[in-house]
Length: 435
Figure 1: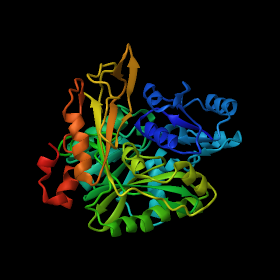
Figure 2 (figure 1 turned 180 degrees about the vertical axis):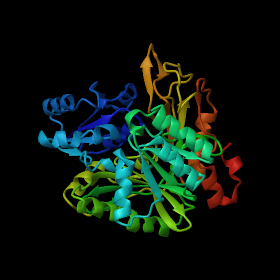
Figure 3 (figure 1 turned 120 degrees about the vertical axis):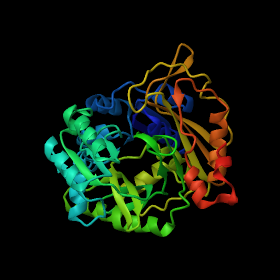
Figure 4 (figure 1 turned 45 degrees about the vertical axis):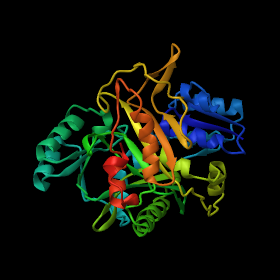
């Protein structure tokens, strides 16, 4: 089989790497891809993910057997509909079903209609009415741009003043463009966050192992929200019964709800959850693999990814096989991210340097220029490590990162620290584990 992956980031690097493991796959292409993918024998095709016609032409000319879509923008823009109309096999939700991610209000309405647990909310197109609602509800409160904002359109506001400022930025200054023409304002849920992804085809739901992401930019969960600064799997301090509850009260009901609404979902359904005192509640839904969760979940998947997708599309109850090992990933980001940041900063060490067993660099925003690797995005690279448990996985990750100099980049030094503390692995103090 020839497989095409649409996208260019760290999630797509992980997908390409996993697909290359399949004995059924002869060639993997990525569009637009990246310089780093050549390290794994993947051919990048410089066609924009927004150029549906160009991608369809390439798929026909190259004889692509299956296309997998990584990012949310082409999904919301209807790439699956366009490929399907052209008679090409593609894995992902239709443009209508992808509105679960493309519009937060759309997702909230369905959750309310079908009794799927989530935070109380209201939606606004008028700035002053939105501010009046904040004054009425008080803080903490969460302000969200309704549309796509590259993972940066959610602002957790601890004070009313912060919420007013967020509304001014999103609705007044249009920081996120048209994505901020409508805002969703939610109660602030408290608890442990959890990322739970599933392969979905209509009412068929096949959950993956859970992961936990770190959204805040800086240590101690401080600073602005980002697209994710690191992740790990499994999440040992969240009991299996809660994960099963999330599957039966959130994932499966949402799949059924989408069928009932006439917009059946096929693809990866991502539930960003808060495990509250009242049980799991939805923070957000995404319509594709999470980033950086994919980079720590796929290394644990022992099943052939192509077999899983093809079995799912046939309606088979595919049984996923997982490694018992833990996986830890830490992001290195450009200084200034998630705000403005420079590009083209030379990286001090080659990121294809020799690693320990079970480790992998996944490139999100790099380019190879003038004989060296340079930055080309906000989140630049992620180091993923497998270990017998989280303690070992994080030791391996931070061993490599801490031993190197990263001028122009920053990373969180406490990814996974809370998990290790809460699960009390080997009775060790996590502050020494991460050194």
